Each structure stands twice: as C-alpha cells, then as structure tokens.
Amino acid sequence: MKKIIFIIGILSLLMLIGCETEEKKTIQTTYIGGQSGLIASFIEGAPPSEIFDNNQYPFGIAIKLENKGEFDIAVDAGYVEMLGFNPTDLGTTQANLKKNIGLMKGTKKNFDGSVLNGDSTVIEFNDLNYAVNLPGDLDLKVRANTCYDYATKVSTKICVKKDLLSTSKAICEISGEKDVANSGAPIHITSFKENPIGSNKLQFTFVIEKVGETNDRFFKKSTDCLDTATNMNKNIIHVKITSGVGGISPSCTGFREGSGSEGDVMLYDGAPRTVTCTVDTTNVQGEFEDFMNIELGYRYMQFIEKSIVIKDVSTS
Image (tube, rainbow, N blue to C red; front, side):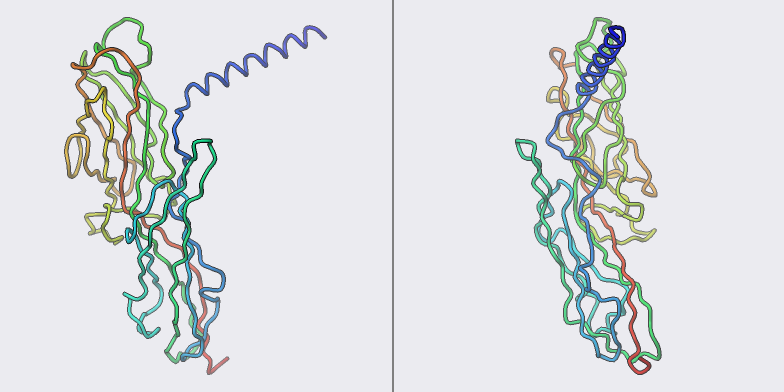
C-alpha cells in the first residue's frame, strides 16, 4: 500500500513539473485568440422562405453582424452586398442592395482577464417586392457578401545577444521555432523561426496563413472584394513589424510593395507564404529576451446563403 502511495506521489509530481514547463512556454499577452472576424447570419424570416411574384409580397432582408475578432472596424470600412436577385426585378438597383458597415468594436480582454464582447449590428434592406409576373415557381439562392478591412496583431518572444555565435551559455535559446500569439482574426502567423546567420546577424522567418473558412477570400486593404483571376489586389496582406531588436527594425525580402520592415506580400492562390527578415545586431548591447510585434492588414470577404422560392400567384 505504501509503495502504491509513493508511486502515485511521484506521478503527481511529474505532472506538476510538466504543467509548469508548459506554462513557461506560453506567451502571456492580452490576446484572446480565435480564427474569426465578423460572423454574419440572416435574421429569421428576413428573407422569408417563400415570397410571391407580381408585387404581391413586400419583404425585407436583414443580416446580423457580430465582431468576434479583436480588431475594430472603422466607419464605412466595410459593406454588405446582396446577390442572387436581378435588381430590376425588385424595382431597384444593385447600388441599393449594397450598404456600408458602421463602427464595430472588436472583442477585448479586460485587465482582470474577463472578456468584453465585440459590437453587433443589423444591416437591413427594406421595401423589397418582386415585380415580375412569373410563368411558374422560381427557386433562388440569395447570398449576402460581407467585405471589410481587418487586421491581426501578432507577438512572439525572441532571444538577442551581441555575439550570436558565442559558445558561452545563453540565457535564452536563439535558434529554433518560437511560440506565437495571434489576436482573434481569420489570418494568422502560424510559424515563426529565429536563427543566427553570422556573428552579428539574426534571421527571422514566419509563415502567414488564412485560418478562416475555406470559401472566404482576402484582398489588399481598402480595395473591392472582387473575386476574379485578374484582380491584382487579391490575396494581398500588408505586413508591418512594429517592434525591432533592441530598437533596430528588421529588413525583410519578398515584399510586393514596400521595403524594410513594412510592405505587401501576395499569398499565391491563397496558399501560406513565408516571409524572411534579417537584423544586424552589431550595435545591440547585452543579452536579453524581447517581444517582436507584427501587424497583418487586409480586406476580408465572406458570405452566407439562403434558398427562397418565388411563388407564381397565378398557379398557387
């Protein structure tokens, strides 16, 4: 019996040590995390599942938006557009089926660890009526496209010292994979590596990846969400490194536009993209750990759909 108690005690101690080790690896930030920006949904009954033709059934469409991510959407920095109807059949224009989104603050973590939910709103398209006299029932798929500017804030802890090739025992590990913390958003940095490439030069490589839904798309910030093969603003992410190594900003390669520590990168066909940066540590003093902060900016598009039937009143 004593032997069993002793073994249980040893196992419990090992579990505690493992937990402590895991906690030490975790980056403590104010980020809540997650893979969502806006979440859109149709309000029940708007649109209804069935409407009538020949101006016999006035109806409306209402989309609820919830900011589940951690970035604030500015006034008019996004829109909702309805597709699936011929706008002239509703006695309107496509411009009237597109509405801007107002200010929507993101989710926030309070100082005590509690979470303050992001804003929600409802976008409405009212006074709609299907004017055409149909020869029979018509099944339609109505789509609401949501397009908005968003950003991801990313933090990782790096190790720095003046002589990177010194064989003396370092206070932190310079080479290898680093833990990454992403704010709640549909684009993430999923891998970050740090390695010395000389006695006074550090190299950082990180992978940018879309982690949102498969059918979502992204574009250069503040451009139209035009999902065509010829749109040169498609799959563009703006990268901005907002803190450097001991005050020294990295210099990155592969930017489509920009230079140094800020510029645009293209994720070809939406696939993950690796960015490589270097920093000269010649003027770095001491040996220390520090945060490197990166911001990813983009225009994000997602959609929801609903099937409705337009009933021919002459045969109903």
